[in-house]
Image 1 (cartoon, rainbow, N blue to C red):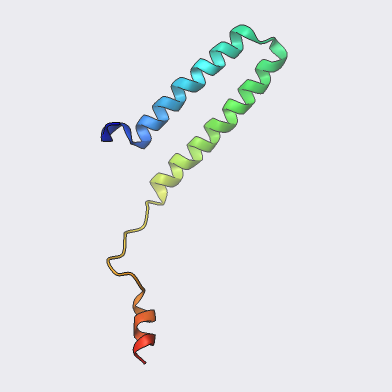
Image 2: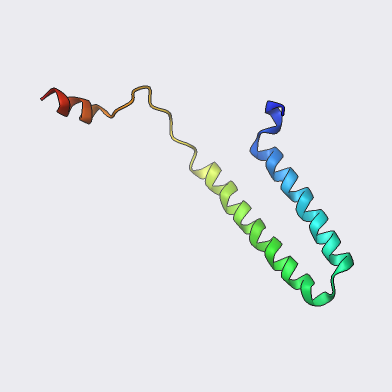
Length: 79
């Protein structure tokens, strides 16, 4: 798989397409009593995706350390 498809944007677009197909099939095949369940499940997924997207923007991943241990641990070994 190409590197450009391994992004959060590609994941988001892919899941939106899949959920659209699932909801369309549910709308066409299922009776109205189960449509509400599909809508609630898809709404729950969307809210989870939205909160994860906000968290990715507000809390970026930490910078990677160049050393394997914190400085305090290395200093306490020297004592």
